[in-house]
Length: 537
Image 1 (cartoon, rainbow, N blue to C red):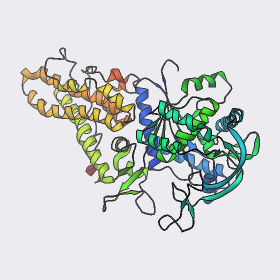
Image 2 (image 1 turned 30 degrees about the horizontal axis):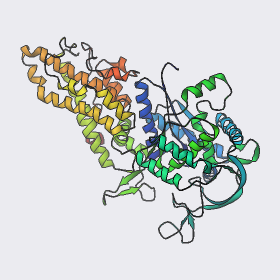
Image 3 (image 1 turned 180 degrees about the vertical axis):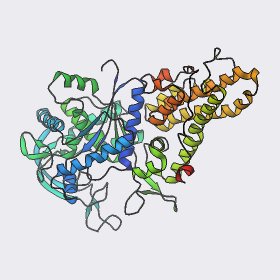
Image 4 (image 1 turned 135 degrees about the vertical axis):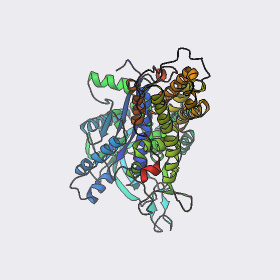
């Protein structure tokens, strides 16, 4: 295990109060692409996702759906997430549920460490609570109801604008206020702790405004992990949920194996989250870790929300069933296929900001990039190779400089450029590196005119050179696009007899020009990306 560097990437663990949706799938594919890239680049990857099953919101959802217990409701929801992740080719190594014994043990261990830390005290909470967001608010933070958000006189959540509950109960408090200066120092010393940079500015501004101590236990309901030294209290859902990242790598387990796993895996390299939970991950979570003397995650990447482009007004709107504009993951899969789905959301959506999506734009991206460019390059190149070289591919040229080779020029240094983009989750930029080679190869076909070279026996060497270069461009492009579209990349490699390269852990070497051996059978196959008009008829 330790012969490779560890790379630990996580998604949020998802609430089970509703089915998995486009936003949860978006977060998960973001992490999956990074995990696939890191494996190919030689890392030993741990990719974690899962479900957040405790808290008042989950208990209410269970009751609303007619389940006898919250646990029964959670058990009914787990297959929905697991099946969708399987369909979307998610390569997670672990799926954690906060109702598992390992999480129960880790959270109770956390309570003991917090008690020893001196940052925990018992008091009473009297204030506002948002059940949907599982968040506490002070009187000064509360939004007053108006005609836009609700009845006048109501107290509303400043984030989701839904009515708040007034909570008065005994509680344990975490001394979050003691970590203001420590957190600001963290942000100063690690300016990339929160990404993108403008999200860091939001977090810093929040912390500079002052921190209140955090209520971390509840006594008004019992669906949660009990406080080990005071069983009348259950753990506040976020105090439980955030620990899942360490639970999954052995936190609190008293064995040599678990300690070795924790030392190897922690800290995580990337927590990928939505912007709505950035305060929990960039303020509360690091403060908790500071309190118990544990290392902090290296980066938290907060993506924006997906909105829908109104076809009539052109404006971006929040997705909702009441507006009739909600898009389910299956709707997109039905249109684009799984790999087209992954490609569109990872390469055409601005990950750090809110982004408006539309079926029209999905079709444009799919047809332009996948059908007309990538799929067309594979089809034309393999067809010509089969036609001109008896069903096979030309051998590697003895002289790599016998003729001008613009594709080798484009491919020079391509892995360095691509990896620099991938490592900061700039997937659109990484895709551009691959598409530059694909576009160059399509232009190369038109410029070199292999069909004309094939008519002249004296041009046989040049024809072999051209076709070899096209197949080599396909081989490298397939590797670059594999984190986004693993199945079609594997199929492209198989068609040019490079299937042994699938699942590489040395991507840098695979992207070096001239590795394609040639002189092997190739296979045409059906179009990998049929134009959408053809698919809909």
